[in-house]
Image 1 (cartoon, rainbow, N blue to C red):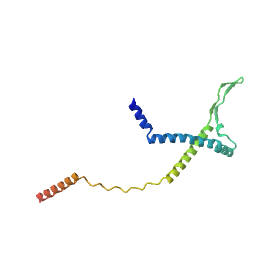
Image 2: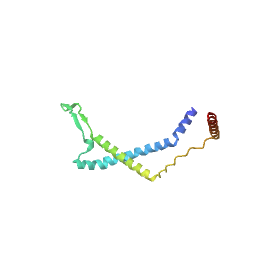
Image 3: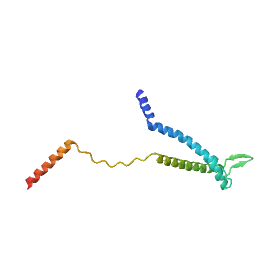
Image 4: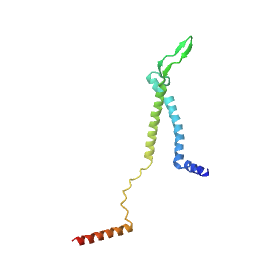
Amino acid sequence: MKTFFKEFKSFAMRGNVVDMAVGIIIGGAFGKIVSSVVADLFMPVLGLFVGGVNFSDLSLTLKKAVVENGQEIEPAVVLAYGNFVQVVFDFVIIAFCIFLLIKAINKLVPKKEEEAPASDPAPAPDIVLLQEIRDLLKEQNAKKTE
């Protein structure tokens, strides 16, 4: 049981896992900020340009509600696409902000210079000896065939 906890501790304390956890937490907070910007700033302005439309109220009624004696017997079947439009705007703005952030980080981080291809390392001494023997044998065989 102790080895299990040691393995878990080494896994959880790895740099990549901790970095990922921090990224997820910051990303969640960032997503809330962007959602607020979209819902509270962009969508009202966009709604004003479209004629005062509140996007979260946009819907298409597929089947009207059945009402008898003032009581609703069957609810209406409604395709509420306004919230979807708002979520799509959230996604596009979040993706654009992340693109700008990564682009800025790439400019700040110095680029690594491309390394020249390494030349072949010198062969081991035993390989050199074997190559010399091979060459001597080739010479001997060439002399015998002449």
